[in-house]
Image 1: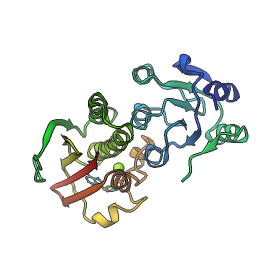
Image 2: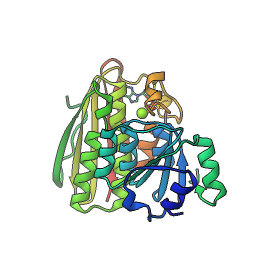
Image 3: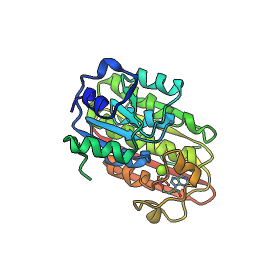
Length: 115
Length: 148
Ligand SMILES: Nc1ncnc2c1ncn2[C@@H]1O[C@H](COP(=O)(O)OP(=O)(O)O)[C@@H](O)[C@H]1O
Ligand SMILES: [Mg+2]
């Protein structure tokens, strides 16, 4: 699924990386626990999380993830957004909860990672 | 302080990084630098990813569970050895600590996104050879080897 479609479905506000909206992802993973993300996420995955600190960006960086959706209306601070810029990431936020956002994407055909 | 014997045979490059336990938000800095170095060398992306994940989990552990330590990366022609050593409380029961989901992390740590008890098992899974030793109230030392 194109990141652009994800942005539209979740009515996202783009925080940084608008240029990357044409990128595709194969899977999505949703969690507020970064160790779970680190243990179960494959490449080409969009990360959905309600955690809003710089370790989210670090985690994405380590996994070569290029896109993060912050849920529940959470918005990271400027220095966190700056970090994401260095790694060419697309950051966006949605007012939907993690559950609702996941449901919307899943029902439109975006699958989860195999555990 | 050095806890584990270093294997310097066939060494091409060595890099050392301090890891502080004082500022959680800076945890991951060393792993980020290590990842950039490996990328510059032109190492296979899959191996880099495994090294990055394991090193990052190890660095987070030093930051949240110990009193501080260091990470040393030994790059060789056919493998990368990573040593992670800290001073601190150590681990009383390593077999228990290695189990998925076992964690002594506080609620505060979990609110920061860690403390799922997945770090050590994931480190072991990511590397080709995993060694850990620890003495309670003294130190924890880990060596991870990644074959190229
Ligand atoms: N460097 C360390 N120093 C002291 N204790 C540690 C260290 N690393 C891990 N531990 C212990 O092992 C447990 C499991 O570690 P880990 O699998 O990384 O999970 P988590 O960090 O999420 O708790 C920790 O909760 C802690 O009790
Ligand atoms: Mg851990």
